[in-house]
Image (cartoon, rainbow, N blue to C red; front, side):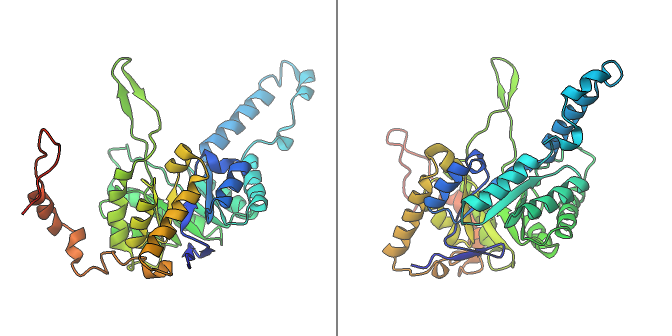
Length: 342
């Protein structure tokens, strides 16, 4: 069975990718993911503000007593020789390249043009096969327009694209007023791939302590519907590779994403819950589904249920909204079952 696929210009043995998580920070778990069938790995994001905060702390420690205790300065490492900055992350890229035989994709989250371009260049030099731009930005400034937000994404992408030659993916937000148009514009600006979608932090409240909760909620299968919709709309209409992300817990979600046109399917939450070996379960489930229907190649199923491929493309548009509402039936209070619409 041929499961090969292409993502952001990279040839992969199958469509399953381990996305950024604590698992992809450790060489041991990277090897386990590869052994379980992961066709590529995305390293955790390098955050520019963390690097700058570390550098600032080091500078403070080495300069705090320049005037009062000069003879004690020899006890501090010279700033030029200190291993601050992105060195640890760059070493992770180099060691990951040596440890596994699958493509290693670095992830970057910057805060200004200098950070995006400088770190992108260093990640390429460290050996990353590709670069994922994790543009995590919540427009909390009420004076900022939708066009301003879109332009920020485009400016970051263009700046990075002029800096590196390796493939670049953009982790896309679902909150643009026109997701489809933004996706097309990002490809025109140089994005080789689009990841649908970035899960932004959404706070909750602790009513007992009256505090904002900052806990992380892993994704659930019911979150698949929004990326499923937009992948179905974009498939066959953009030359950018499409990566599905969010809600993958079983082979069922993998198959659904492929049917609507995803080139690869990424997962984090299921691997954190069940360990790197769960990747083998996902891969086996995908193969079993294809074999049961006598498909011999991934290309035979990818996109066959995209909007472009369906006889009734309105199933992914507003026209289907009324049908959904009309078809809903209140569950029986005793059995919990919904009566069949006739």
